[in-house]
Length: 382
Image (tube, rainbow, N blue to C red):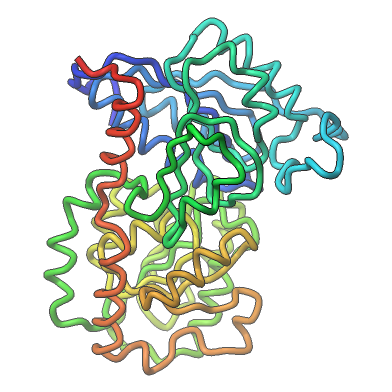
């Protein structure tokens, strides 16, 4: 979808997103910003991006969607990533940035000074209030997208779309004036997920396992997809089950996964750069997926999920969805020691109960709610 074709005319503001994708970071931060940018652009906002040229970035993909992307150069080898902070103020994911916060802020300042955005939207685990203060002269308001609640921010608006997240988790980290949007009702999903929700629910009226979807993230740096395919050999799936594997174009293990798929006992298709993920999920009976941003997409469509925890920052999300009944958990490091899909999970009653629990997590209208808060705060609507 080219944003130049958007016909929105009501919203008159400039929005700049600061987010990165890389082999280390993954694609989720940029993709959820892109979802919000699409929703804003559809209403007339001018949206642009600032991204660093990390290996595995999505800069050209974002440009292909019609957005201007201002690039920051790839960090030089051996750079000291956080020299401006002492140990008490270090950021857990500072190495994801590739440079120090001060260096990143300096590079962004020249871009923002020219653009002077009404909203700067920052989605990056390696940035905190120090970066935000340094750039304050160059934007009118700041929105932060976060999942961790582990560092200070000086934002006007903060979004954490984690299921069961409470505003109280951020009280110590933001100014009293900051508006907090917490919980999966604010999950940033593309509109096609909400649109396909009734269809997805209808086809689950009589659940059965015939379509299995495997999606371990856009990068899958550690080849969890390949490990899942190998683990499936020990599972008793229906003989007519069809397996669909979704991979990102920058996934380093793509060739290996395609080789494994050719030797599966069931018909197995590997797809790259999927543009109709909502339809694919709606047509699937069970998913094996990572505990990342796609968790909310699966829940919106009531798709039962076996969830693998691939990073420590995914553990809270995964456990919350497990206790809600929307997903089963499997430790990605112990696939060889436990059955990946149990006979109990194939049972139609179990699939049905997981669908009911998943549907209660989010309805897919989070982007609409977030935009209402952005526009109410700034009062830019004509």
